[in-house]
Length: 189
Image 1: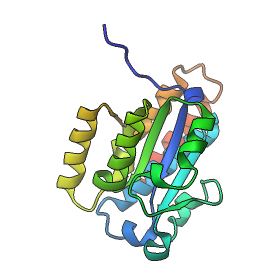
Image 2 (image 1 turned 120 degrees about the vertical axis):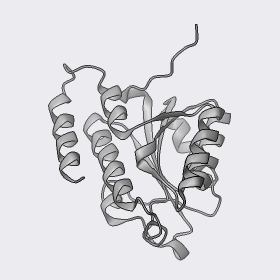
Image 3 (image 1 turned 180 degrees about the vertical axis):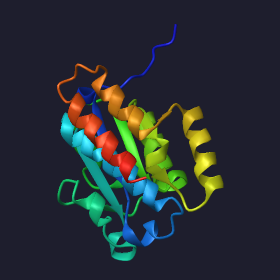
Image 4 (image 1 turned 90 degrees about the vertical axis):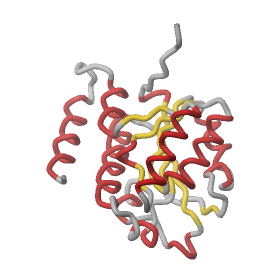
């Protein structure tokens, strides 16, 4: 029987990949990406899940979108490599957290998200992809990348599924707080 990979708040990390204004403007699903990523980050903060982030060549693509940036740790490392693993100290910081499950959110699905996921999978980590918190300029690129990532071993999920999997039980001490975040997110749709 195969082992099912499941997340808990105490064994997960969220990585926000390159949600920067100039590139975000070209995303047909930009509003959904911001809403769902913000939700994942708010739940992560509520449940004590660490967050890491990167910016792809910020000199050219601009800063992280303000609504996302206010939810992130300061000093987001810049990168020119498409994989976050190419950002200075990214892997070292991830290894220090000693958490097996990595939740990737951001863009673009077929470029930076994919290459980061492949590197993390090769490093023996579990990669979870809330598909409603990922984006690409083109639907074909997004959908094809998700199929390839799933075949490589990444686990497809949704932002809300991540939240409830992290809690696992309605008796969780933060259940009401997370439920309020779910309701607030629904109002933004």
